[in-house]
Length: 483
Ligand SMILES: [Zn+2]
Image (cartoon, rainbow, N blue to C red; front, side):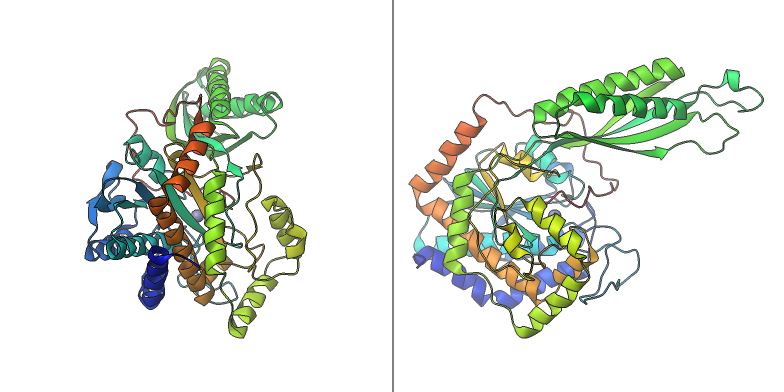
Protein backbone atom coordinates (compact mmCIF):
# COMPACT_ATOMS: atom_id res chain seq x y z
CA UNK A 1 0.00 0.00 0.00
CA UNK A 2 1.27 3.51 -0.74
CA UNK A 3 2.39 5.51 2.27
CA UNK A 4 0.59 8.65 3.46
CA UNK A 5 2.03 11.45 1.29
CA UNK A 6 1.61 9.27 -1.78
CA UNK A 7 -1.92 8.37 -0.79
CA UNK A 8 -2.69 12.09 -0.37
CA UNK A 9 -1.37 12.88 -3.84
CA UNK A 10 -3.19 9.96 -5.47
CA UNK A 11 -6.44 10.98 -3.77
CA UNK A 12 -6.07 14.62 -4.80
CA UNK A 13 -5.83 13.48 -8.42
CA UNK A 14 -8.86 11.18 -8.04
CA UNK A 15 -10.90 13.95 -6.42
CA UNK A 16 -9.95 16.42 -9.15
CA UNK A 17 -10.50 13.94 -11.96
CA UNK A 18 -13.18 15.88 -13.81
CA UNK A 19 -11.30 19.19 -13.48
CA UNK A 20 -8.15 17.58 -14.93
CA UNK A 21 -10.04 15.93 -17.78
CA UNK A 22 -11.64 19.27 -18.61
CA UNK A 23 -8.20 20.90 -18.89
CA UNK A 24 -6.87 18.12 -21.12
CA UNK A 25 -9.97 18.29 -23.32
CA UNK A 26 -9.74 22.05 -23.62
CA UNK A 27 -6.14 21.79 -24.87
CA UNK A 28 -7.31 18.98 -27.19
CA UNK A 29 -10.07 21.21 -28.61
CA UNK A 30 -7.71 24.16 -29.24
CA UNK A 31 -4.66 22.48 -30.79
CA UNK A 32 -1.72 24.85 -31.32
CA UNK A 33 1.55 23.99 -33.09
CA UNK A 34 5.04 24.47 -31.63
CA UNK A 35 5.84 27.91 -30.17
CA UNK A 36 2.28 29.06 -30.91
CA UNK A 37 0.78 27.31 -27.85
CA UNK A 38 -0.47 30.56 -26.32
CA UNK A 39 -3.89 29.34 -25.12
CA UNK A 40 -2.60 25.96 -23.92
CA UNK A 41 0.30 27.40 -21.93
CA UNK A 42 -1.90 30.18 -20.49
CA UNK A 43 -4.43 27.58 -19.33
CA UNK A 44 -1.76 25.54 -17.51
CA UNK A 45 -0.09 28.66 -16.06
CA UNK A 46 -3.46 29.90 -14.76
CA UNK A 47 -4.17 26.62 -12.97
CA UNK A 48 -0.69 26.47 -11.43
CA UNK A 49 -0.90 30.07 -10.22
CA UNK A 50 -4.30 29.37 -8.69
CA UNK A 51 -2.63 26.57 -6.75
CA UNK A 52 0.08 28.83 -5.35
CA UNK A 53 2.93 28.12 -7.78
CA UNK A 54 5.31 30.96 -8.67
CA UNK A 55 5.47 31.10 -12.46
CA UNK A 56 8.25 32.50 -14.64
CA UNK A 57 6.79 33.06 -18.08
CA UNK A 58 8.50 33.33 -21.46
CA UNK A 59 11.69 31.59 -20.34
CA UNK A 60 14.60 30.85 -22.73
CA UNK A 61 13.31 33.35 -25.29
CA UNK A 62 10.08 31.45 -25.98
CA UNK A 63 6.79 33.16 -25.07
CA UNK A 64 5.05 29.81 -24.44
CA UNK A 65 7.77 28.29 -22.23
CA UNK A 66 7.46 28.61 -18.46
CA UNK A 67 8.65 27.28 -15.12
CA UNK A 68 6.21 26.95 -12.19
CA UNK A 69 7.77 26.37 -8.75
CA UNK A 70 6.45 25.47 -5.33
CA UNK A 71 8.36 25.09 -2.05
CA UNK A 72 11.98 25.77 -1.21
CA UNK A 73 15.24 24.00 -0.49
CA UNK A 74 16.25 20.50 -1.52
CA UNK A 75 15.50 18.17 -3.10
CA UNK A 76 14.20 19.76 -6.31
CA UNK A 77 12.05 17.47 -8.42
CA UNK A 78 11.35 18.54 -11.99
CA UNK A 79 8.20 17.55 -13.88
CA UNK A 80 8.06 18.05 -17.66
CA UNK A 81 4.94 18.92 -19.62
CA UNK A 82 4.43 19.39 -23.37
CA UNK A 83 1.37 20.86 -25.09
CA UNK A 84 2.17 21.41 -28.78
CA UNK A 85 -0.04 19.91 -31.49
CA UNK A 86 0.76 18.69 -35.00
CA UNK A 87 -0.23 20.34 -38.28
CA UNK A 88 -2.86 18.58 -40.38
CA UNK A 89 -4.04 16.11 -37.72
CA UNK A 90 -7.39 17.63 -36.82
CA UNK A 91 -9.74 14.78 -35.95
CA UNK A 92 -13.09 14.21 -34.24
CA UNK A 93 -13.22 11.76 -31.31
CA UNK A 94 -14.49 9.03 -33.63
CA UNK A 95 -13.29 5.70 -35.05
CA UNK A 96 -12.90 6.80 -38.65
CA UNK A 97 -10.80 9.55 -40.23
CA UNK A 98 -12.91 12.66 -39.84
CA UNK A 99 -11.19 16.03 -39.28
CA UNK A 100 -12.93 18.74 -37.24
CA UNK A 101 -11.40 21.26 -39.66
CA UNK A 102 -9.64 19.80 -42.70
CA UNK A 103 -5.91 20.60 -42.68
CA UNK A 104 -6.02 22.14 -39.18
CA UNK A 105 -3.71 21.00 -36.38
CA UNK A 106 -4.62 18.21 -33.97
CA UNK A 107 -3.17 16.46 -30.92
CA UNK A 108 -1.83 13.51 -32.92
CA UNK A 109 0.90 12.91 -30.32
CA UNK A 110 -1.41 13.32 -27.30
CA UNK A 111 0.39 16.32 -25.83
CA UNK A 112 -2.92 17.60 -24.41
CA UNK A 113 -2.54 14.67 -21.99
CA UNK A 114 1.24 15.20 -21.61
CA UNK A 115 0.90 18.78 -20.36
CA UNK A 116 -2.01 17.93 -18.08
CA UNK A 117 -0.42 14.87 -16.42
CA UNK A 118 2.63 16.95 -15.55
CA UNK A 119 0.56 19.81 -14.17
CA UNK A 120 -1.67 17.44 -12.18
CA UNK A 121 1.36 15.67 -10.75
CA UNK A 122 3.00 18.96 -9.70
CA UNK A 123 -0.17 20.15 -7.91
CA UNK A 124 -0.78 16.78 -6.25
CA UNK A 125 2.81 16.70 -4.98
CA UNK A 126 2.37 20.22 -3.61
CA UNK A 127 -0.79 19.10 -1.75
CA UNK A 128 1.07 16.12 -0.24
CA UNK A 129 4.01 18.36 0.73
CA UNK A 130 1.65 20.75 2.51
CA UNK A 131 -0.33 18.04 4.29
CA UNK A 132 2.74 16.14 5.47
CA UNK A 133 5.25 18.95 6.07
CA UNK A 134 7.60 17.75 3.34
CA UNK A 135 10.44 20.15 2.43
CA UNK A 136 11.98 20.70 -0.98
CA UNK A 137 10.68 21.98 -4.27
CA UNK A 138 8.53 20.76 -7.11
CA UNK A 139 9.14 22.52 -10.42
CA UNK A 140 6.87 22.11 -13.42
CA UNK A 141 8.62 22.87 -16.72
CA UNK A 142 6.19 24.01 -19.41
CA UNK A 143 8.07 22.83 -22.50
CA UNK A 144 6.82 24.08 -25.89
CA UNK A 145 7.64 22.82 -29.38
CA UNK A 146 8.68 19.25 -28.61
CA UNK A 147 7.60 18.14 -32.06
CA UNK A 148 10.14 20.41 -33.72
CA UNK A 149 12.87 19.50 -31.22
CA UNK A 150 13.18 23.05 -29.97
CA UNK A 151 11.75 23.76 -26.49
CA UNK A 152 13.89 21.84 -24.03
CA UNK A 153 17.20 22.22 -25.88
CA UNK A 154 16.91 26.00 -25.51
CA UNK A 155 15.67 25.70 -21.90
CA UNK A 156 18.68 23.53 -21.07
CA UNK A 157 21.07 25.97 -22.75
CA UNK A 158 19.64 28.73 -20.54
CA UNK A 159 20.47 26.72 -17.43
CA UNK A 160 16.85 26.23 -16.30
CA UNK A 161 17.48 22.66 -15.12
CA UNK A 162 20.43 23.58 -12.90
CA UNK A 163 19.88 22.34 -9.36
CA UNK A 164 17.12 19.90 -10.35
CA UNK A 165 17.79 16.57 -8.59
CA UNK A 166 15.68 14.40 -10.90
CA UNK A 167 13.10 14.94 -13.64
CA UNK A 168 9.98 12.98 -14.59
CA UNK A 169 8.08 13.06 -17.85
CA UNK A 170 5.08 11.13 -19.09
CA UNK A 171 4.11 10.52 -22.69
CA UNK A 172 0.91 8.91 -23.99
CA UNK A 173 1.74 5.58 -25.59
CA UNK A 174 0.27 2.15 -26.21
CA UNK A 175 1.81 0.39 -23.20
CA UNK A 176 2.25 1.03 -19.47
CA UNK A 177 6.01 1.04 -19.42
CA UNK A 178 9.28 2.84 -18.71
CA UNK A 179 11.64 1.25 -21.23
CA UNK A 180 15.40 1.88 -21.23
CA UNK A 181 15.87 2.25 -24.97
CA UNK A 182 17.83 5.28 -26.09
CA UNK A 183 16.81 7.75 -28.79
CA UNK A 184 19.34 9.12 -31.25
CA UNK A 185 21.22 12.41 -31.07
CA UNK A 186 20.48 14.69 -33.99
CA UNK A 187 21.25 17.91 -35.91
CA UNK A 188 18.71 19.71 -38.12
CA UNK A 189 20.38 22.02 -40.65
CA UNK A 190 19.53 23.87 -43.86
CA UNK A 191 22.00 24.54 -46.68
CA UNK A 192 21.40 27.67 -48.78
CA UNK A 193 23.33 27.52 -52.09
CA UNK A 194 23.88 30.62 -54.20
CA UNK A 195 24.90 30.50 -57.89
CA UNK A 196 24.37 32.82 -60.84
CA UNK A 197 21.25 32.99 -62.99
CA UNK A 198 21.59 32.67 -66.75
CA UNK A 199 19.44 31.65 -69.71
CA UNK A 200 19.73 27.88 -69.69
CA UNK A 201 19.74 27.65 -73.51
CA UNK A 202 21.21 31.00 -74.55
CA UNK A 203 24.12 31.43 -72.10
CA UNK A 204 24.49 28.42 -69.79
CA UNK A 205 28.26 29.02 -69.73
CA UNK A 206 27.56 32.19 -67.75
CA UNK A 207 25.39 30.43 -65.17
CA UNK A 208 26.39 28.69 -61.93
CA UNK A 209 23.65 26.30 -60.90
CA UNK A 210 22.68 26.33 -57.23
CA UNK A 211 20.61 23.20 -57.85
CA UNK A 212 23.76 21.50 -59.22
CA UNK A 213 25.42 22.17 -55.86
CA UNK A 214 22.44 20.72 -53.96
CA UNK A 215 22.51 17.58 -56.11
CA UNK A 216 26.29 17.19 -55.90
CA UNK A 217 26.15 17.57 -52.15
CA UNK A 218 23.45 14.91 -51.91
CA UNK A 219 25.53 12.54 -54.07
CA UNK A 220 28.53 13.13 -51.82
CA UNK A 221 26.46 12.42 -48.72
CA UNK A 222 25.03 9.28 -50.28
CA UNK A 223 28.63 8.03 -50.73
CA UNK A 224 29.32 8.97 -47.11
CA UNK A 225 26.69 6.50 -45.90
CA UNK A 226 29.12 3.58 -46.22
CA UNK A 227 31.53 5.25 -43.82
CA UNK A 228 29.29 6.09 -40.86
CA UNK A 229 28.21 3.90 -37.95
CA UNK A 230 25.55 1.38 -38.88
CA UNK A 231 22.79 3.02 -36.80
CA UNK A 232 23.34 6.54 -38.18
CA UNK A 233 20.53 8.06 -40.22
CA UNK A 234 20.95 10.92 -42.69
CA UNK A 235 17.83 12.31 -44.38
CA UNK A 236 17.36 15.28 -46.66
CA UNK A 237 14.76 17.08 -48.70
CA UNK A 238 15.24 19.68 -51.42
CA UNK A 239 13.12 22.55 -50.18
CA UNK A 240 13.89 24.82 -53.13
CA UNK A 241 15.26 23.28 -56.30
CA UNK A 242 14.94 26.24 -58.67
CA UNK A 243 11.90 27.39 -60.57
CA UNK A 244 12.00 27.16 -64.39
CA UNK A 245 14.09 24.72 -66.41
CA UNK A 246 15.18 27.46 -68.82
CA UNK A 247 16.82 29.52 -66.06
CA UNK A 248 19.98 28.31 -64.34
CA UNK A 249 18.77 28.47 -60.71
CA UNK A 250 20.65 31.15 -58.77
CA UNK A 251 19.37 29.76 -55.47
CA UNK A 252 18.56 26.33 -54.06
CA UNK A 253 18.07 24.93 -50.58
CA UNK A 254 18.28 21.53 -48.92
CA UNK A 255 17.38 20.49 -45.38
CA UNK A 256 19.26 17.74 -43.58
CA UNK A 257 18.82 15.69 -40.42
CA UNK A 258 21.87 13.83 -39.18
CA UNK A 259 21.21 11.24 -36.46
CA UNK A 260 23.39 8.73 -34.62
CA UNK A 261 23.31 6.81 -31.32
CA UNK A 262 25.81 9.15 -29.60
CA UNK A 263 26.24 12.92 -29.74
CA UNK A 264 29.93 12.78 -30.72
CA UNK A 265 29.05 10.52 -33.67
CA UNK A 266 26.54 13.12 -34.91
CA UNK A 267 29.19 15.78 -34.59
CA UNK A 268 31.78 13.86 -36.57
CA UNK A 269 29.30 12.93 -39.35
CA UNK A 270 28.03 16.50 -39.41
CA UNK A 271 31.59 17.87 -39.88
CA UNK A 272 31.99 15.56 -42.87
CA UNK A 273 28.64 16.71 -44.29
CA UNK A 274 29.84 20.33 -43.99
CA UNK A 275 32.99 19.44 -45.98
CA UNK A 276 30.87 17.78 -48.65
CA UNK A 277 28.87 21.02 -48.95
CA UNK A 278 32.18 22.87 -49.47
CA UNK A 279 33.10 20.28 -52.10
CA UNK A 280 29.80 20.86 -53.88
CA UNK A 281 30.67 24.57 -54.09
CA UNK A 282 34.04 23.75 -55.65
CA UNK A 283 32.38 21.59 -58.29
CA UNK A 284 29.46 23.86 -59.06
CA UNK A 285 31.15 27.25 -58.69
CA UNK A 286 28.65 28.28 -56.03
CA UNK A 287 28.76 29.57 -52.46
CA UNK A 288 26.59 28.52 -49.55
CA UNK A 289 25.53 29.39 -46.02
CA UNK A 290 24.55 26.96 -43.28
CA UNK A 291 21.45 27.56 -41.17
CA UNK A 292 21.62 25.48 -37.99
CA UNK A 293 18.04 24.98 -36.77
CA UNK A 294 18.31 22.72 -33.76
CA UNK A 295 19.99 19.64 -32.38
CA UNK A 296 19.78 17.28 -29.44
CA UNK A 297 21.62 14.60 -27.50
CA UNK A 298 20.86 10.91 -27.34
CA UNK A 299 18.66 9.92 -24.41
CA UNK A 300 20.32 8.60 -21.29
CA UNK A 301 18.23 6.00 -19.50
CA UNK A 302 18.15 5.64 -15.70
CA UNK A 303 17.30 2.10 -14.65
CA UNK A 304 16.50 3.02 -11.06
CA UNK A 305 14.06 5.72 -12.17
CA UNK A 306 12.41 3.35 -14.66
CA UNK A 307 12.06 0.73 -11.92
CA UNK A 308 10.62 3.29 -9.50
CA UNK A 309 8.03 4.36 -12.09
CA UNK A 310 7.16 0.69 -12.73
CA UNK A 311 6.76 0.04 -9.00
CA UNK A 312 4.44 3.04 -8.67
CA UNK A 313 2.40 1.97 -11.71
CA UNK A 314 1.93 -1.45 -10.11
CA UNK A 315 0.93 0.07 -6.75
CA UNK A 316 -1.77 2.12 -8.42
CA UNK A 317 -2.87 -0.47 -10.96
CA UNK A 318 -3.57 -0.05 -14.66
CA UNK A 319 -6.98 1.28 -15.74
CA UNK A 320 -9.85 -1.11 -16.43
CA UNK A 321 -11.93 -0.45 -19.54
CA UNK A 322 -15.69 -0.54 -20.00
CA UNK A 323 -17.31 -2.60 -22.81
CA UNK A 324 -17.97 0.71 -24.68
CA UNK A 325 -14.30 1.68 -24.44
CA UNK A 326 -13.22 -1.77 -25.64
CA UNK A 327 -15.62 -1.51 -28.59
CA UNK A 328 -14.22 1.94 -29.50
CA UNK A 329 -10.65 0.59 -29.25
CA UNK A 330 -11.49 -2.44 -31.43
CA UNK A 331 -12.94 -0.17 -34.11
CA UNK A 332 -9.77 1.96 -34.10
CA UNK A 333 -7.64 -1.18 -34.12
CA UNK A 334 -9.38 -2.33 -37.32
CA UNK A 335 -8.03 0.75 -39.12
CA UNK A 336 -4.43 -0.36 -38.48
CA UNK A 337 -3.10 -3.03 -40.87
CA UNK A 338 -1.79 -6.14 -39.05
CA UNK A 339 1.57 -5.71 -40.80
CA UNK A 340 1.91 -2.24 -39.27
CA UNK A 341 1.00 -3.56 -35.82
CA UNK A 342 3.63 -6.32 -36.07
CA UNK A 343 6.29 -3.82 -37.20
CA UNK A 344 5.44 -1.43 -34.34
CA UNK A 345 5.61 -4.20 -31.75
CA UNK A 346 8.87 -5.58 -33.12
CA UNK A 347 10.35 -2.06 -33.10
CA UNK A 348 9.42 -1.68 -29.42
CA UNK A 349 12.00 -4.42 -28.73
CA UNK A 350 9.84 -5.52 -25.80
CA UNK A 351 10.89 -9.12 -25.07
CA UNK A 352 7.31 -10.45 -24.94
CA UNK A 353 6.00 -8.41 -27.91
CA UNK A 354 4.52 -11.42 -29.67
CA UNK A 355 2.08 -11.87 -26.78
CA UNK A 356 0.56 -8.51 -27.68
CA UNK A 357 -0.34 -9.45 -31.26
CA UNK A 358 -3.99 -10.12 -30.38
CA UNK A 359 -4.26 -7.50 -27.64
CA UNK A 360 -6.20 -4.29 -28.34
CA UNK A 361 -5.54 -2.24 -25.16
CA UNK A 362 -2.47 -3.31 -23.19
CA UNK A 363 -3.12 -3.37 -19.44
CA UNK A 364 0.08 -5.17 -18.43
CA UNK A 365 2.91 -3.37 -16.62
CA UNK A 366 6.15 -4.98 -17.81
CA UNK A 367 9.61 -4.65 -16.24
CA UNK A 368 11.81 -2.04 -17.94
CA UNK A 369 13.65 -3.46 -20.98
CA UNK A 370 15.91 -2.38 -23.81
CA UNK A 371 19.09 -1.24 -22.01
CA UNK A 372 21.71 -0.58 -24.71
CA UNK A 373 19.16 -0.68 -27.57
CA UNK A 374 18.68 2.35 -29.81
CA UNK A 375 15.25 3.44 -31.02
CA UNK A 376 15.14 5.26 -34.35
CA UNK A 377 13.89 8.71 -33.41
CA UNK A 378 15.07 11.69 -31.39
CA UNK A 379 13.58 13.79 -28.57
CA UNK A 380 14.56 16.94 -26.71
CA UNK A 381 13.82 15.18 -23.39
CA UNK A 382 17.31 13.75 -24.00
CA UNK A 383 19.01 17.05 -23.27
CA UNK A 384 17.25 17.32 -19.91
CA UNK A 385 18.48 13.79 -19.20
CA UNK A 386 22.10 14.97 -19.44
CA UNK A 387 21.47 17.65 -16.77
CA UNK A 388 19.70 15.52 -14.21
CA UNK A 389 18.47 11.91 -13.95
CA UNK A 390 15.37 11.81 -16.16
CA UNK A 391 12.76 9.24 -17.09
CA UNK A 392 10.06 9.42 -19.74
CA UNK A 393 7.48 6.68 -19.30
CA UNK A 394 4.33 5.89 -21.23
CA UNK A 395 0.84 4.77 -20.33
CA UNK A 396 -1.69 3.09 -22.58
CA UNK A 397 -3.57 5.88 -24.32
CA UNK A 398 -3.93 4.21 -27.69
CA UNK A 399 -4.40 0.72 -29.08
CA UNK A 400 -1.48 -1.66 -29.56
CA UNK A 401 0.36 -0.74 -32.78
CA UNK A 402 -1.23 2.74 -33.09
CA UNK A 403 0.93 4.84 -35.40
CA UNK A 404 2.62 7.92 -33.92
CA UNK A 405 1.37 11.27 -35.27
CA UNK A 406 -1.88 9.88 -36.64
CA UNK A 407 -5.58 10.70 -36.70
CA UNK A 408 -6.14 7.60 -34.57
CA UNK A 409 -3.86 9.08 -31.91
CA UNK A 410 -5.71 12.42 -32.01
CA UNK A 411 -9.05 10.62 -31.61
CA UNK A 412 -7.92 8.47 -28.69
CA UNK A 413 -6.33 11.42 -26.85
CA UNK A 414 -9.72 13.11 -26.64
CA UNK A 415 -11.87 10.24 -25.31
CA UNK A 416 -12.23 8.37 -22.01
CA UNK A 417 -9.40 5.90 -22.81
CA UNK A 418 -7.05 8.90 -22.98
CA UNK A 419 -8.59 10.35 -19.80
CA UNK A 420 -7.93 7.12 -17.87
CA UNK A 421 -4.36 7.17 -19.10
CA UNK A 422 -4.03 10.76 -17.89
CA UNK A 423 -5.23 10.00 -14.36
CA UNK A 424 -3.12 6.82 -14.10
CA UNK A 425 0.02 8.60 -15.36
CA UNK A 426 -0.42 11.63 -13.08
CA UNK A 427 -0.83 9.36 -10.03
CA UNK A 428 2.18 7.26 -11.02
CA UNK A 429 4.32 10.34 -11.52
CA UNK A 430 3.20 11.95 -8.23
CA UNK A 431 3.95 8.73 -6.31
CA UNK A 432 7.40 8.57 -7.90
CA UNK A 433 8.13 12.24 -7.17
CA UNK A 434 7.19 11.73 -3.51
CA UNK A 435 9.38 8.63 -3.25
CA UNK A 436 12.27 10.79 -4.47
CA UNK A 437 11.40 13.62 -2.07
CA UNK A 438 10.87 11.57 1.06
CA UNK A 439 13.38 8.70 0.66
CA UNK A 440 16.89 10.17 0.42
CA UNK A 441 18.42 6.75 -0.24
CA UNK A 442 16.19 6.30 -3.30
CA UNK A 443 17.17 9.69 -4.73
CA UNK A 444 20.82 8.97 -3.96
CA UNK A 445 20.67 5.69 -5.88
CA UNK A 446 19.16 7.47 -8.88
CA UNK A 447 21.78 10.23 -8.75
CA UNK A 448 24.67 7.79 -8.29
CA UNK A 449 23.53 5.95 -11.40
CA UNK A 450 23.37 9.25 -13.29
CA UNK A 451 26.89 10.14 -12.13
CA UNK A 452 28.16 6.75 -13.33
CA UNK A 453 26.44 7.07 -16.72
CA UNK A 454 27.70 10.61 -17.38
CA UNK A 455 31.24 10.09 -16.05
CA UNK A 456 33.80 11.25 -18.59
CA UNK A 457 31.27 13.12 -20.76
CA UNK A 458 30.81 16.88 -20.69
CA UNK A 459 27.47 18.10 -22.02
CA UNK A 460 27.92 20.86 -24.58
CA UNK A 461 24.75 22.37 -25.98
CA UNK A 462 24.27 21.29 -29.60
CA UNK A 463 23.11 24.86 -30.30
CA UNK A 464 25.45 27.64 -31.39
CA UNK A 465 25.70 30.13 -28.47
CA UNK A 466 24.00 32.97 -30.35
CA UNK A 467 21.17 30.90 -31.85
CA UNK A 468 17.67 32.12 -30.97
CA UNK A 469 14.61 29.84 -30.84
CA UNK A 470 13.07 29.66 -34.33
CA UNK A 471 9.83 31.47 -33.49
CA UNK A 472 8.69 30.88 -37.09
CA UNK A 473 7.08 27.48 -37.45
CA UNK A 474 9.17 24.42 -38.24
CA UNK A 475 7.54 21.23 -39.51
CA UNK A 476 7.49 18.41 -36.97
CA UNK A 477 10.00 15.56 -36.95
CA UNK A 478 9.23 12.08 -38.19
CA UNK A 479 6.35 10.29 -36.45
CA UNK A 480 8.60 7.80 -34.71
CA UNK A 481 10.47 10.19 -32.49
CA UNK A 482 8.57 8.82 -29.55
CA UNK A 483 7.95 5.36 -28.17
ZN1 LIG B 1 5.06 13.47 -28.46
